[in-house]
Image (tube, rainbow, N blue to C red; front, side, top):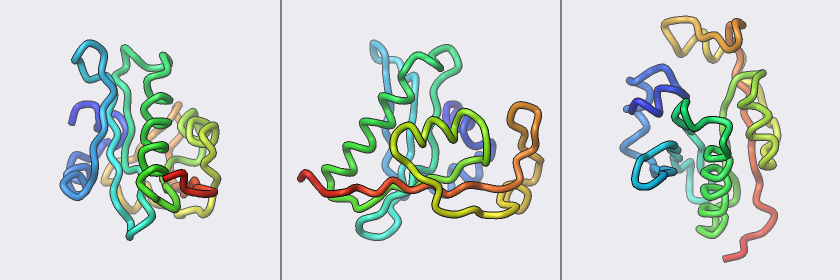
Length: 141
């Protein structure tokens, strides 16, 4: 939970999707340094609900390796697409775009309507959520 709270500040929200999701971790010598939660959205679509890396291991490639592994896992499993929601700016947006995610919609005022306290990124309040989608061009499985 400690890791997941780095990506989503609401423990209630995390708990609401955790039991119906698949959880993946990145570890070093048995110590978990990263976590990712993916929830099914129908038979061939999945949503990346949360991905986080322990601060001591950020910017070391663990998040990218974990995301790539998850992308491949769902490709092999026959998924048609992966979706994710993120803020409208910051490193998270580039993180997903580098792996092929494309902006597909904007959820206006998402962070204001769904969180009791304002959320800030780099000193700027988040209001809108960008919805991104990674469409698999063909299944290798």
